Image (tube, rainbow, N blue to C red):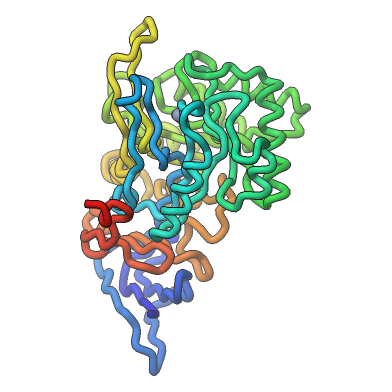
Length: 390
Ligand code: ZN
């Protein structure tokens, strides 16, 4: 079926004005003022008075579950497809996390394949917190070169009591293997870095670049959890000014407002200092456990993030922080697509994948992923695996 989304206020993420969008199969075929194809019946959707934007990309989700820091009963479950749809996420990047011992990359890969079958786009990182990091083939570079879904390695933990404390040389080796594997497989080869609570967490990343005689660039890394507290966030802004990418975790603030910096507020601070949000992304860290430890390292509380946090912070950045709509939109669309080299993602443009959100009165109204409606007029049409079980 050929679809046309009519009369929406389109942000590509740049403002395009009131347009019709023609969807042919899973691609955007045309954007124009009034699209009609003579002799062909079109499935029409009227998006008058709505914003029409690219589907969101979430670059850090524990798609196969994670956690367990409080023992087996604190292992988190796999999130159903509906958790992504209600958040407007049409592309997700899965990762393993703290538990690289009893969980494995294979299960993340299979969950990614399931989410793809269910209708959204999905890639993964090989590896986990630990160094040496677990892989599928035994080599980071082989995983990247040979397995389509694997686009990087991570999350490798640094500056955290759960980290393996990799030396700069060990991290350099990981980065180089990711880079070469990615060249062979035509991927981004990003090293996704879990930033912990320790002061000056970015130092080891600068050390790695220095060790390579500046032949590697900071853009090989995507450090996440950059808003976990004030000193980490201010180091992250310095890192951003030196040319790196930074990723802001959206789901933790709700549970730990006493030390996390609110993601929408982070965007405001960065925008005021730098004048753009070009090298910043949001990710939810959904499915991951959010543990709180006391000064002696004992677990005192455990929460779990959900993908919806991205959407809520996106709206807050526009409505509370008054940031420009197109700039904030980039943080969830073109920026992660650029950082992760996801071609045909993150834009409403002819030839791009038809991943589209329709937003009415700042509420998510409809979600189209690869040309199919997964949510229409606030009704989720496909819940995923669990609708067959329950
Ligand atoms: Zn993490």
